[in-house]
Amino acid sequence: MQTSDIEEALMDLPPSSKFIYKTLSREGSMTLKQITEETLLCSRTARYGLTQLEEENLIEAAPALHDGRQTCYSISHRSIGNDRTGYPEQVLVEPDSAHKRLEAFKADDPDLRLVEISTEYDEGHVPGAVKLDPREDFLDAGTRTIPSADRLEKILGERGITPDSTVVLYSNGYNEFAAFVYWTLKYYRHRDVRLLNGGKYYWTENNYPTTKSTPTVTPAEYETQPPNEHIRAYRQDVQSALSEDVSIIDVRSPEEYCGEADAPARASGHIPRTVNIEWESVVRECGRFEHKQVLERPFAEAGITEDDEILVYCNVGERSALVWFALSELLGYPNVANYDGSWSEWGNLVDVPVETCDSTDR
Image (cartoon, rainbow, N blue to C red; front, side, top):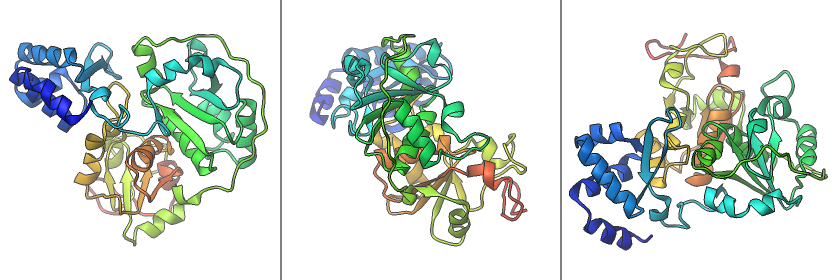
């Protein structure tokens, strides 16, 4: 839908609908309670305004990820433009598009592979999806590091994936495990890898089909490319960044950042000179990515621009991979690296600085 069409559709709607649409455009997805608090509209008026917007297909509603009893409302992907989502299909696949390709996913065709990264695959998955366990299959045994080239070749080959395959990934939660695998495949320079927008949560909550049947897969030969070190940060890169003009983003919760929550490390807190932009800010409550205007806002408010060199980290590199995906693949920032050692490495070192919200280096 073009901007002029949206304005025309809004023209005949009540003031409450226009106010709510403007609020959702500015703030991103919100529950009814959040809408009433932000707009100061009473619940009855807000519901009426939302109903009018839904009838015009200007907003979409879905169960909230953390509380399925609540509904989250957001600007409809049909009203954003730019191939419906605002993001290229080459990196982000919409559920409707994936649904149309189910027969292709179910075929034993190495050109197109759908992969679920979760421990709940056997409870039901998207038809045609093959399983990848994020712990048992993917991470190197006994460590938190990504697979070696040899191990990755074995993992992908067993799932019928070749270097020329289009690989569509999804996981449960906010797709953070899928984003971590996506980042890893990009690190090894796989040419065509994409995420399913909304992941397993959005798919199941919106009644897209699932199955417990395991697809037939013919193993393939996979050969990795030399890694792309531009998108991966190591301990020494972070140490160098402390004295350079580099933006470091801690994507964990404020409690983790401040050292007020348990951490998988000796120390709690954060790396000095970091800004805290929580990873959940890049996705809606329904699990789908925010549209560009909302997506880039927390970074802009922190003074981070596309011209910056950026390092992101969390505890083990998974949540930060989701933010890396948002910055690098959706917003197109050219210099973003994921520090996958993250706090599980930094917080266990004895010769590096650590800060909390109420102290200096210790």
